[in-house]
Amino acid sequence: MASETLRQRHREFNSTAVAPESQKPAGDGEKETELGNKTPGSKRSLTIAIAGVLALLGVTGYSFMRQPSGVPAVAVTTVAAPTETALQSVATKRGNAQKRLEGMTKVERRKEVNRLPIFTDDEVDAVLRANEKSWQAINGALRIDTDQVSSNEPIEDYLATGDIHGGSRYMVGVFDGHAGFMCAEQLAARMQPMIDAALQEIEGINKTISAPLSDAVVRLQRDVGRGWDTVPMALTAAFMAMDNELVHASLAEYQRLADPSQMSRLLGPAVSGSCGLVALVDTDANEVVVANTGDSRALLGVRLANGTWKAVRLSQDHTAENQNELSRLAREHPGETVIRSGRILGGLMPTRAFGDSRYKWPIGVQRALFPQLLANGHKYATSPPDLLSPPYVTAHPVIVRHKLGKGDRFIVVASDGLYDQMADADVVQVVAQWYEARDPASGLVTKDKNAATHLIRAALSTDGNGNRRDEIIRYMLAIPPPVSRRYRDDISVAVITLNEAN
Picture (tube, rainbow, N blue to C red):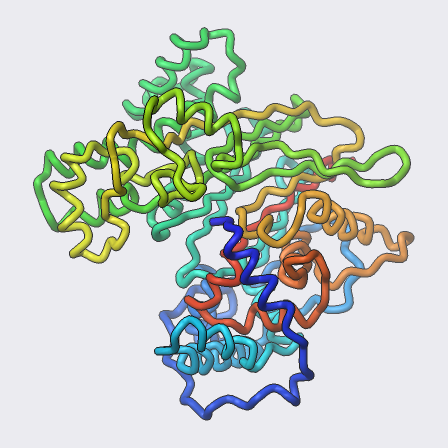
């Protein structure tokens, strides 16, 4: 999650003078670490050779992406897929670095990080392009570019995309996990069909939906009236029902089964947590509706009449820096000091999230279940101090609805790892550069075909003071997990390019 500490580490790290790679101290001659499990891919011989490398990079699936037909190509200087040699070199350097940093104190580690061998340009490209994907949606009306670069191992961010009931609706969601990956993983797998079912329920098409979702729809219709617009109601119902299923229905199922072997499967996602943001674009209605719980963010890139670009935020961060959230917590928990050191009860940064049962279950339930969950490896199965009146955290989203205008060219949906590195205006300006470079007449050149990759490259090349240098990303990506988490977060980005058919 975003933190001033992380940003400060980034500033300290990048204030170090950059020496040529030839002057960097050589490795200690450690043996290459053993790599992870194989990952399916589209070219079997290459996949078998680099599968373990991809596991180290945090890649959960690998395939060679082809530029969708009908999409204008970006002017590029390098477009090749990651090579076997570069990926293996990445794994070797990171494995050696992990051994080199192992057992050091924090002070020793911070000094040694600045002496690690940095990545070459080919190695940087291999990391950035291992997860990138591009495709068209809604009969070519939208172009979707996605990419992810991990810092945690395994990555705790997930992306989810897909068509939504109606024929002209498409969703892009980012789920930024914390305290493990299990909650975000469930959200990515189940949110799209949940939204689809909610829309059909509200529109009277399908009544065979889950009880939590049906209950959420009925409750919203009762509380706000049936006149509430369909898409905002469906998104809200889906978010609330998903959290109910993860936190409460799973608990009831475990208590019914009374089978300890099912504890991790049923309760692991509840102990973990995740922010969640979904942008639903409707090309017929010419609008985007954004539902957000947590501190991921959606930005609209607007091209003004004079040719300049403007960033419009389509979501609000749910943290202690949000005065509306502070007021809500004070209203819901009178007389309590809920925010401590900028976090919920001193622990959780986002004030809204999925999962996070330690801030939602009654203390009696936590005392009954957490010792065994902790013994099973769920290290966050611990009760926060002064848990007096849970729940303190809600998954109820804040909805932003925007009618798309002529100048609205793209939407950026990203986890907070991106915004740790870049301000909103810089994010839009970087994507605008990619957008304009697709026109050969612009004279602009970008290195990446994929808009999300282009954006992540810029973010990881930017220091804490906003300065951008190629050397920075070569340092940043060379730091292995888990030490890398002190300098950067997982970054997941989706760029939705609008009006592609015109």
